[in-house]
Length: 138
Ligand SMILES: [Zn+2]
Image 1 (spheres, rainbow, N blue to C red):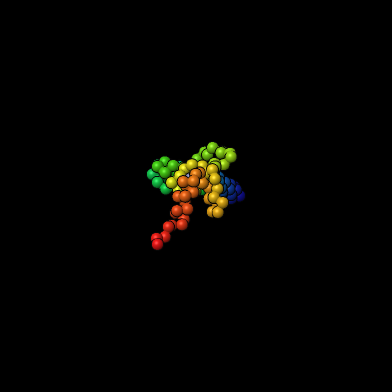
Image 2 (image 1 turned 60 degrees about the vertical axis):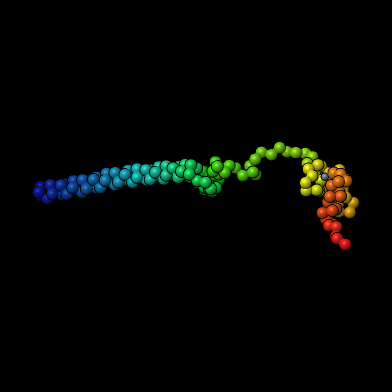
């Protein structure tokens, strides 16, 4: 009886030990796993940052980067921002139409009743009509 009881107790203890070891091992594994995951995400973030920095420094073309915190369009310094980003002063009223003669930069004063072209002077009127209707010889 006594021997049997002792055997049972030792068995139970062994089971408890195994179970205890198991659970503690599992806990440790979980911890390691978690740490590895944390490291992985950290590395990932760092590598993304590195890549972005490298792109900014070395790239000479426009980059479209979609990240977790938003979408970035990166323009290289040599190229600068496209003109659509330039601040433009709001001009009102709109700039006056210029003389239709290509070489003339004056704002128009008259409008040709026939061609509806804007003109600044009689000289420009004549110049334009000479261009449009070249004098034919003979
Ligand atoms: Zn003109």
